Amino acid sequence: MQRGGGGKFPGQDLIQKYFDEIRDAKVGDPSTPFARLSISTKDTEKLLNDAVEFMENSAACTKATSVWFSRDNVGLPGIALFFKIYTQSTVNDIWVLADFMTKRGEHFEVRPTSEHPSELARGKNESDVLHAFEKALAMSKACAEGSTKLWALAQKNGDPHLACKAQECADADACKVKMLSHYVSHLKLVADDKHAIKEFDRRLPFEINDWACAVGIDAALPARLMCNSLMRAEKWEAQMFEHEPNHPKDIVRREIFKKVV
Image (cartoon, rainbow, N blue to C red; front, side, top):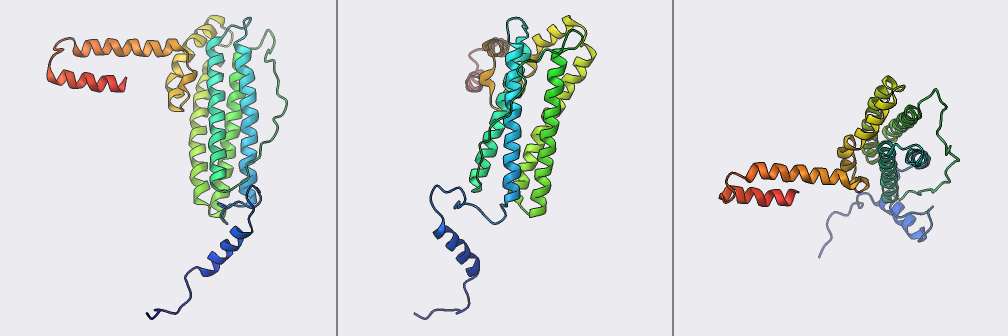
């Protein structure tokens, strides 16, 4: 059988380059990954690790904030729950970036967290709640700026994979900034009213219910919120099916309803 063509195999030089790198790579050595492409540079790897380090410190700070507001002599459990869920959301984002880096064959660095303040008391004339939300908003805006820098670097290097991930992070950061901005503006208006702060603390868990479910950390919500949701669902079911319980269409609707609930 006669071989056709006779020309050079397309992409032979690039294949040989990657083949040599794969053969020289050592298993377990972070400096010689198998999955890394040429578009992944040291600059992008450093910026991603810097982002993870910032988020680790941010999560430690919001965790301390949650513990502070859950203390027995502070007594603001709704705000404590908010920062608990906010911390878990940040930890989830760290895992997303870690999986993204390992998928690209980049070296994920686990850096130590810096020392953060464990006490949040601001004095008699200042609101601890307002200060905590202002600090969370400032950290969220800094994180959003980091996502923008990551996107700009991806555009400069022609890295579409990183650009998509950076845009996804920037969208999520923008949602967090908007949410925290709403709370800060409200708290600035009622900072001196203790009854308004207590009402804000009481309503906050119900407002973050949908957000917690959206980011996949609804397990952190207290059972009473879930019970209220089930009670509303049962009430709606009774109103929907009480007229003709044996009608064929109602039987189908009831089966679908049970699957959804």
